[in-house]
Image 1 (cartoon, rainbow, N blue to C red):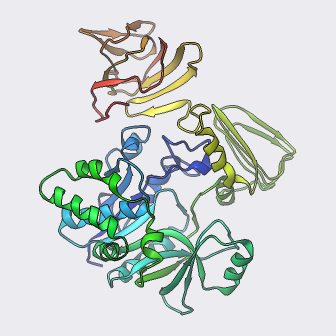
Image 2: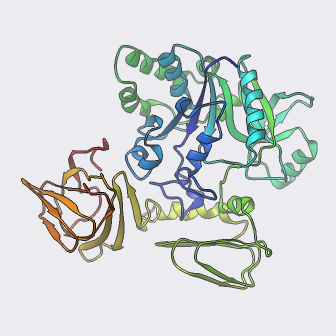
Image 3: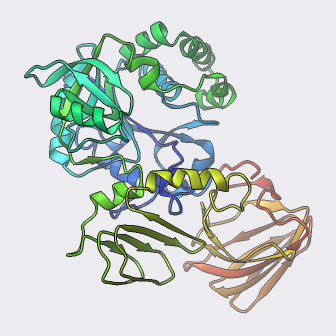
Length: 471
């Protein structure tokens, strides 16, 4: 395997079925669901040793890169999307960039950022088989060996043959239970994992054939960046012209070059709280319990608390997930319907679908202690050593800061002053200001905002260390 191999990690999803832990501004791929590291970090790590971190590229939204996911994405190779257009446009742009940046034809290993794989050695073995097949011009998908008749996944049917790489006959949409049982009994059907391996040139040839509308726009983008324009700027200004289409529907279901590697790798797409419950270690009563939980005579339940005490008595097959601002309750087996909850929240019931009470920022975090209903908001702000907020102003609110630990450097108009513990600063409406932590310990302060409009989009940034635009 002398050919260059690059990883492409798709990290643009919203993870709505894992609400309330997953939110639009910090979806599940950037969270620690059942391990030490985030799902994105774990996905990149499992590519090693075949693919180094330097050869892994992450495709994600530009709002994630400058927002709550900054710390997870900082230092990685990024392809930033200004808007979501599903997987086919993202993969097309990555393939073209690899060809044009390296002047080579690399093998691309395309993985979602939000899957769990517990059998690392088995995954590496499957990856090597897939790369070898890709070097022969095949489009390779990983087919997960089904453990039970699952109605929540699509399936892939292959020819009945004894080989490392199987020829794909067709893709099957999510079946009803009877068809899922039939396919499980047949033995030549696999769960569609959404993981792929191919040469950049191969997928672009198939794009030209089956997705000419994507290919045409891509060629216009390539012309611009090959003529010296910033490729990220070209993506920012042209990516929204791409159609919204998945690689499965656009290419894989139509191409005659598709093959499959059978993968028994301890895989889960972590697509629901039921999937989290299934993958977790259980106690003697079949419970998955984490956080501040007191469980008495409970069976088969997932009980997860981030802050408040969950006291559960006599529960059976119940999912209860608590975060500081929301609680999810549903029956085991019903968690796919959490997406319906998020859809309802999007209709205007607060910001519960958007962000947590504690919001990460590149410089630290803020926690809303009291809401905005009465014309004021109270926050706790934490700034890392060396962190600094943008130079900014607000048109609708004033701010009062009281330092509770650490030392703040405060810019307010032409004045720069150091504020120690128990000290305070006042920022009038419209005044240009900045908060910095030049010390060696965490800076903590309480902020009181007062005004008629207190949303976070009342920010005009004049200078920012982290490259953020307004909002």
